[in-house]
Structure formats: C-alpha cells, structure tokens
Length: 101
Image (cartoon, rainbow, N blue to C red; front, side, top):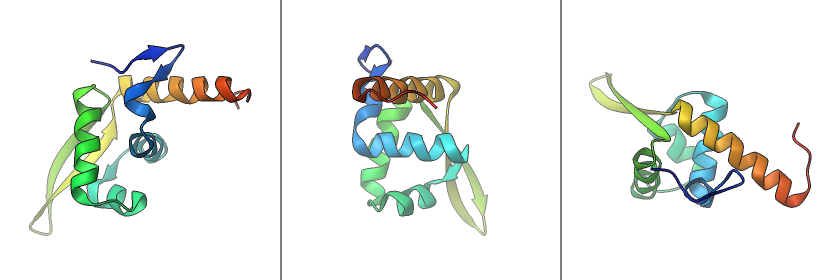
C-alpha cells in the first residue's frame, strides 16, 4: 500500500512528521526510536502513530533488540520507502521550481 502518487508526490510521506522521519532515516540509515523521538521533539505515542502509517505503507521497518536489559526499537527505511521518499523530495523540488542537486 502506498500513498497517493502524482508525479512522485506521496501523500503518505508528505505529513510533516512523516516527512521528517523519512529524512532522518534516509540520512542515518537506521535510528533508535528514542533518538528519532528526541530529534522530532514529539511524544512516543505521536511517533508511534506516524511510524505505524509508514510501516503499513511498506516504507519503514523496525528491528527490536535488547540492550542493557531494555528492549530497543530501531527504525529504517525499506528500499521502497527510500525510493518513495526521494521521489517525493524530487516532486516537491519540481513544485517549487528547484533543480535537483
């Protein structure tokens, strides 16, 4: 399941927090849930809701690992998610008339 695509524009990714999640994961490759939460300055429940939407679209995967007796959740973009994010960014640049770098 993917968002509404029009020339690369993806409504699933376009929501501000989901766009920021994708941007962070595209740059970092993988990030721990708490780090993403801190970077976005949102509550765990808000982040969880956005991550769930991205996971249902097939854009984000999560990996759980135990560290220091606590379970940690790591997030990363899927191949499809990375492609959709980059196409969305290209579509936004086209809308505002900016050339891709």
